Image 1 (cartoon, rainbow, N blue to C red):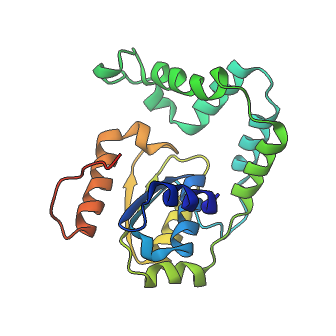
Image 2: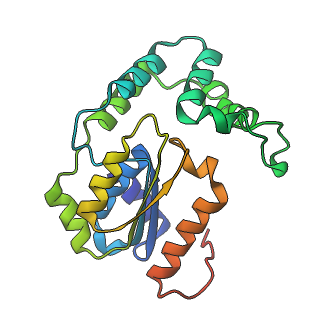
Length: 220
């Protein structure tokens, strides 16, 4: 998947000064991107992810097993929602600009497009994706290569993440020698829970990588 991403960047002609923000399995892919082509990238944000140094938690294995075996799409959607987000946050009022009553309503509608409206991923492909996430591993020597590249790195984690241990984030921080932002009470999908704060962290890191000047502008 990292190779696919590199080929996409080639197609976009993004050969340098690329900033990467990866969440969950996307963070694992981001690590491989940096290792494959470090000179192409200028900053890296790793959110709710790990380097795979230890066996997955039982709760993580149970989560993926249930996702693969729940046949009713609405039950599957509810199960995923309640494991990716803290219940307290789901029950809070949604931001006014979303036009939803609660965060649960907003998340349900958003995930519905992914898990119900779009045809399901074939079972063999789903299993392969889960297996890739559970078995991915970046050892200390490879993490040291990323650190040696001197690419600015930020790790973002939530204390209520049910899928990734907080210790996994601290382990990466130790070997990458980078900063880590911890969101108290947040779950696995921090960009959705703490959108403004998260985007602020990403923008801050990108600006720092550019010498601390200039507003961010999209090239697409």
